[in-house]
Image (tube, rainbow over all chains, first blue to last red; front, side, top):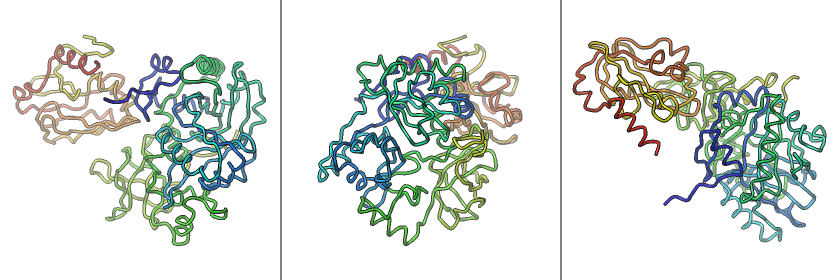
Length: 378
Length: 135
C-alpha cells in the first residue's frame, strides 16, 4: 500500500479552493484560479505559495561554519548573520546532491532550506558528514510553516502585518518579525525572479495548524488591495522557469555538475577542501562538454522534458524543463546542449512529437529584466 | 445532462479517451469533452492532423497542450478529415470556453460508423464512466 500523503497546515484551505496533486509525498495545491492568472499576479502584483513541504534543518555549534564550508560549495565564511545565499551540495564526483538557500541566523546557527523531494537524502547526508565537526543537525521541517510572498507588491502587502520595518531587509537578508502577532522569520528570497519574501511561521507544528492558518489568512487579507492570489505548484514552476532557475530532479541532479548547470557562481574553488572540490577543479581546468541553456521557441509548440535538441542533422542535447511562458506567450525550455553549440543566439530545433521545431538559445531570465523581476525599473 | 461538475450533451457519442462525436449525415464533428478540458485546464496550443489525412479510430490524430502538460487526441472514429477548426490556431482557449461548440476540432468523413460505435458510449454510459473515474 502507498504511504498516506502528508498534509500541510493549510490543507483544508487548499482542499476547498484548489486542484490538488501529489508532490514529494505531500498533497499540495497545483492551482487555484489557474496557472496563468496566478503567474501574472506574481509578475504584476503579489502572490502567495504554501511551501511548507520543503525541507528545513538547523545546524548549530562552534564548527558549523567549517562544517558547512566542507559540505556545500559556496563560501559560508562570507555569510554575515541574518544573511542568506544560494548554494549547492555536491557528491565526490561533483554531481549536485541538492540546491538550496542557506541562512546564517547567528554566528553559530544556520538554517538550510532544501528541496521537498530530497528531505531524507539531504538530512542523512548532513548528519553523516557532520560527525567529525561535532555540530548538531536538527530536522525542523515539521515544526515550521513556510510561505513565499512574491511579486513587486509583496513588501507592501507583508508590511501591513509585520512589526519590523521590511525596508531594513535587503535582498538575500533576513530578520525576525511578528506577523499578525505570531512569531516569524522572513528572508528576502524566492523562486520566482521577483522581489519578495519567504515567511517562516516559527512555532507551527503540523499537528497544530492554528498559527500557520492565522498568518496565511492575514497575508491574504493584507494583500487584497494589491490583488493577491494564492498560487499553486503550477505557477511556481512556470515562474521559476521564466526566471531561469533550476528545478532539482529536472535540470540538475547527481549526474550534472554546477559548472555544467551554469551555477559556477556558487562554487568557490579557492576555499579549503569541500566535497566535490577535486572533481570540480578538474572539470573547470579541462572545460565542460555540455551546458544548460535557455531555449525560446520560434514556432508554435511547447518543449517538454526529454525532447531532443538538434542542430543541422546532429543531436546536440535534450530538454530538461519546458513550459508555456505566460509573459512571452510562447514555449520556453531549459536544455543541456554540447558546449560548442551553446552560444546565445544560436538557432536550433527541438523535436516536438516527431516534428523539428525552430528554437533559439537565449540568456536567462527569459523575460526582459527591465520590465519584470526584482531588478525591474520602477 | 450535467454530472458532477461536467456537461455531457445527450445526443453525442463519447470515447474512453474523452472525445465526443456528433453525427451530421455521413460526417462526424469531433472534439474533446468538458471533462477533458477541465482536467487539462488552460489549453494554450492545439495541433490536429491535416485536411485529407485518413485517421483510424483510437489512433493519435493530434495533441492538446496545456501550460502543464501535453495530451494526445485519439480519433474517436475512422475516416478522412474534411475540415479542421482554423480558429483554434489563434484561440486555443475555445477548447476551455466552449468545448462542444466553438471548440470543435475536426470534421471527418466516416468510413464505417457502425464499427466505430462498438467502442463509443452514449451520454448516459459516459456519465457513468466519469462517475467511476472520480471515485
